[in-house]
Length: 478
Image: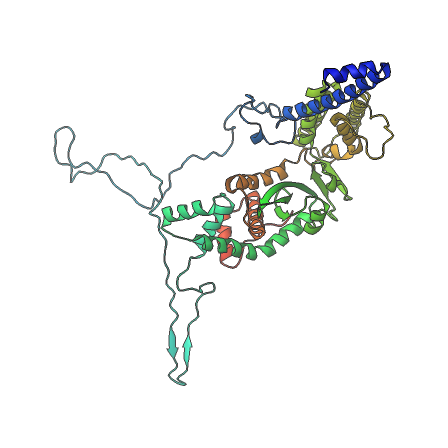
């Protein structure tokens, strides 16, 4: 801030000095105003108008996140025809208890030898007493009566210690940690409370490592299946491993899930993973620059675009943003209606009409947010978020509308986001992975479990098959 004497000195220096001072102050005000607008825009961002998750909204906003899906028209609760989960009686219960009166409730007479005249049955479903089953393996040595040589019996494969835990308890430990996301200590507590098993953290860690090693061939088969799939969803998120930032990458289909942890976020990681390079199908993603450097089909996540359009609409009140939101939602509804009717594509005339509306909206947006004037400086010119969004909608028009051209391509990238969500929950519970090896083990097992769940297979039984030496291999159709 200038003092009074400094201001008077400028005034005494003449008009040019005053003009120069005012220009400097105007530049400073413009810079501060732009900074304030950028900070206010950042504060206005939440899950409904940006990529931020709902968990970051906090409780102070006092509003519930609004879904972009719209009303389905169905009543809340179970729909007609759904199977339900009502507990049904079984024909042959494990135990039967008869409750017979010994004396008449009215006169007190004995009823011991009287046959019942009616009965009513009720069944209680409960857990049996939980305890570990211990199997002792004895390898006997027998001396041959002919040559006097001794021959010893062999223990079954995997029985290597005097005392050890079997496949069932090891599979349960891995299940609790990688599927139910329990930390080591809570997994120990649950096993101890239910079965009296005092498994150490070392035992649980070795079980994770063993399961990961045995699942390596299955993971490679899943990776290959995804690579040859017609539509693949890609996404990434930051995680902590060894107290450092790492990137968790996922490649997903409707039936398979693949995870990989890498120090990098972009192209270097994609090359190591080996799914996106040479992909013959369509890659669905959120328009991150590294994805778009690869040839082949691309489809952008329209859920991300809708949130960005909402932010533009709220900040600039631009009609073109509202019109584009309505158009994308109409396109989505048109595709869903056609699919329900048994169609495999929209009529070409309808597609032409939708494309023409899309182009007109972009023209209105460009008129409202023209490109910045040349500044004479080298490098890329700084643009407003609205202009950046318009450029992306124009440059990647075919990727935005891929779901209209091909019904096999989804409207959004929610599949990949769902596959990442539970790993983020694990990070919130445990804070991070102690080692890179631990992160890799978790991701390999979690990818296997996610694939099993997508195909409706029993997770715990599959994990037991891993420790029995013959892992259950899911269908690998991508």
